[in-house]
Image (cartoon, rainbow, N blue to C red; front, top):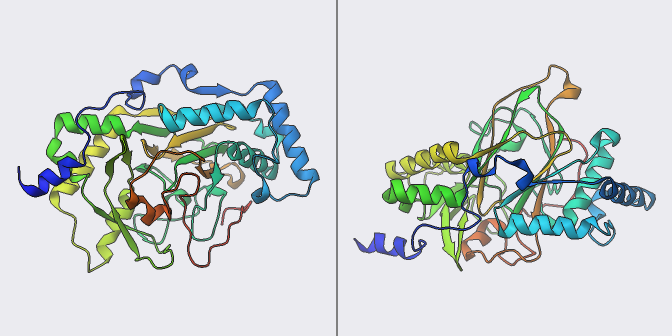
Length: 357
């Protein structure tokens, strides 16, 4: 083993990883294991908090855990968050009655629920702490300044730049569009068993394009591995479109064949081990971006514009997240638990738009 391989191996886990974060899709076919159903009493708490927010004339961005009071549900939401943060890495909250809400009321309820799990982070350089996941015609594979959540069709397995990502389904597509999640720990284990040489490629520094959203003092790209072993945690961070787009920077080296093969193998394994989730209107899905790769299946859209697929997204930062390697600060701005993640550029001002812009 040469020095370069030895240095890579030194930052890899000691071998196969076990525990609740290492799972296969077949392990969770029983939805009762991971879906939390809101009770009538809990929905009434949410409704009361929404009405109080409206009565106070408070904008969504001003909603906090303290002023969006959920006397009994709040502790249960934090227990769900803890399972996402420290356990299997995902959960689903079902039963929010969005058919009874306007979009503003649904967004207020959703933002308030999120506030009991963490602080909302900016999802783009425009400072949007409430994201609108719908087809705005973006083509992220073709345009390096466009983002996947504003596109239609399928999305490859990836992670977002925050501790926890949440999605509220406002409207479903006519068919398809299922969510797909895969344990990045399981993918690591499978690659360790099948192709350890390719796995090592994913522990090397890899360049990623910022899509034109450049924080002050930073270059238009950043560099970090897909996998990092730190403080007893295996962390994963991946978006293939961001990586492919770095070929537009002449000063960066081209992707090696070995790395390309590693990415192909990793995504093939994701397709084998993943869990598919058919989200219903009113569902809130949660994933831990440090341990879950998530994707979207292709879908058929409704012809009527007011029926088309539409989700709301939150990027959440819990107050007591896991320790992260210092390299995450390039993308997260900081690695301090409770104050990291999201995208902040020189002109960024936080806001919660109610229209997809």
